[in-house]
Amino acid sequence: MPETDTATDTAARVLRLEAQGLTRLADHVPADFAPAVAAILALQGRVIVSGMGKSGHVGHKIAATLASTGTPAYFVHPAEASHGDLGMITEADICLLLSNSGESAELGDIIAYTQRFGIPVIAISARLDSTLMRAATWPLLLPDTPEACPIGMAPTTSTTMAMALGDALAVALMEARGFRAEDFRGFHPGGKLGARMRRVADLMHGADSLPLVGADTAMSEALLVMSARGFGIVAVTDAAGVLAGIVTDGDLRRNMAGLLERTAGEIATRDPVTVTPDMLAAQALAVMNDRKISVLLAVDEARHPVGLLHVHDCLRAGVI
Image (cartoon, rainbow, N blue to C red; front, top):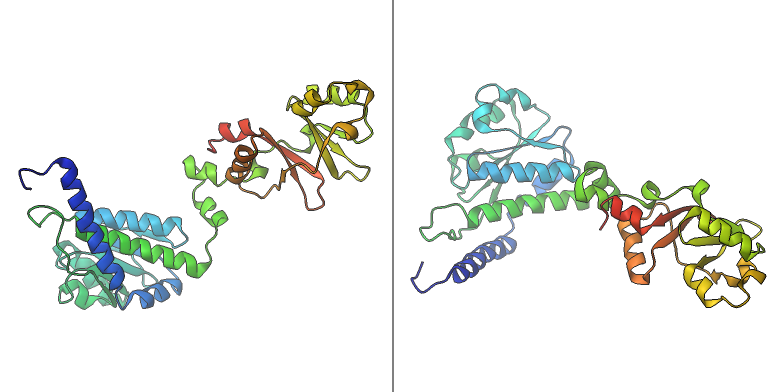
């Protein structure tokens, strides 16, 4: 690093070098990329990912990304494979092997095993003439791009490209399968992702908790329902049970004169904003933030009230 460079200068240089590597990879997507995707789509087994050292760390991430996006996959450590874990690999699987040089000795037993039992191999490497790439069914060649470290030896640009190519595989498979948000939710029930993928139906108060009155209900009675339920609103329905309007604290303040002599239907705000039970809770929260409201009614296709979602329900569930 030049003596005049600051840490910020170094960071910018590294990021530009790695970005250049990604650009070169995008401009030279390996010819076998599409056939590899097609093979995984037709797969009856799983994608077995393996690599040694930094390639192994990248492999762990690729396996996790594949598994969480609809492609059964897991990582097998090459050293452990040589001591019995080869039994985890079946003839119904595909191996995805990573080695920048293509000469990682630790992968030797896995390569031999795949050749012995005719197990297809997808290889990610920067050397087309390497042992790994020659053994691959679908060799995915990384472009010749310098590493970002000052001595040109620490895996930096190469691992970034390998990880990005793994992401590209996962996304291509997602799109080919029509992988949806609800599918993603099924693999992420916990943590922040799980919270954001929850539906209104998962968090809403059910029909038994709803503050409901008919349109001709006297406001004196409607206020009792509103206070008893504790949501700060009362929903107004017509004779068929269809949502006709909503009475909020704001409506009460705007109609203080003669309030108790009027009916709920006369006070209510007509056609209030609503959500459906199958909407993502995160989307419902966005509606609340946009409209500056704290409560949403959930309705069915006929606009019958079926639930109520409060902003506090979203916050308690970690939907932010």
